[in-house]
Length: 451
Length: 127
Image (cartoon, rainbow over all chains, first blue to last red; front, side):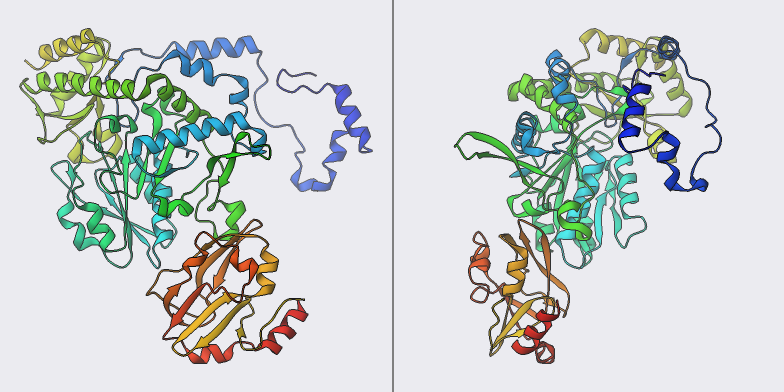
């Protein structure tokens, strides 16, 4: 039997077995002992042909409801230039997802080097690593870095305005260890920093905040880094990296660590993944950054080349004293971000961020005029904003009516947080990809429902 | 044969200690630097912190491995050898001339509990 994904013929197998002096495949597994071997076949249904599977998947795909997305909450529908897919699909990139025989893969190393350089430019910090799995992962690695950097510390302060999923990952990170995640509460939709000083004790290693935060609101971190540094604590800011084209960078706020998810930079929605995380740090934390760093160098003949420069925290270097679980990177997704940024350039990034801002504010302004909807908290936002409905019935009707018009009106915050206080909150995201017509369609439908 | 100096005390983790009045100098032995190979980075301890005996205080990274330095006697970090910051190979060149850090307010009992040169030599012979 020959399967499309298993290239060996019966003949090949016989040859391989005979070269190690065996007659059958069962003989190869004899050493396992009978109790570990299946006596019967595995109870799964019979195989299907490629064509049958294709039809099956098509029919499932047809059940998808298409619509104009005003959905965000960490995953945004931005314009992605065609160069991203066509270049990142090159087989030499697709298969070389992590540089095992590192210096053989000069092309991949160069791509990672470019990614790191761009992340440094966007965040303003000195050193970026080769990428992490996603934004939540970057947050948990930042927490590990903090606890590892301050002697006898165990607690990481996290703003309650951080994305609920990221908070869940951080809670998992601490679970079952002697590490603690302590929440710094919010006030009117943004982190309440008046209580920061009081929260900083010996055990506290640092603070993680997010801007735009879980409500889409931009936060002000004036004097935060000084307060933290006075107590020997580190400061990490999690951003949507596209927003950094028009808002203050982590370096400008005096942060030690910049983290986030590059979904908004060239990665499609794709049912929520795969995504790509980034982390950049100040030079003094260079040896504490998780993962690996690719560096530029010259070879014996003086030619420019790339090399894995530093993997100071990985398990194959640090063994049991490793402070990070990462022994890889998210190279393909990072490559897509790199191609995306190369295609847009800084000015393209600024334009995408500005347009998202302008369109989101246009929609927010007009929705706020309608009865029964309030734009809660008078706080600056970028491309996403929180609406509060006067009652649950109107909210349901609003969502249903817009859906009938082919519009996904927003994400109900309560579906992410499962908290009663978020029950009437709808998060609406508007990117540069939404046209004027789509915005007017949204407003017209909203006016019909909320009159 | 590893070089061992007479006037120093030694730990079984291959650190040496030299007392000069209020100060206790701590470094790694010739055996340790030889085992590690080419040293590429030394993580120095924060000043003013008090470390217990046996507590991990610093890391020495070589091209082969990253090794923890276990503090051989209780004390407070007074100085870290900044020369190593950028020139970690000094340890390979002369590990007894280049200490890692200096402790003050150290515990003399811990010092006396360390091996002398004969004891350390005998210990190395058992390895």
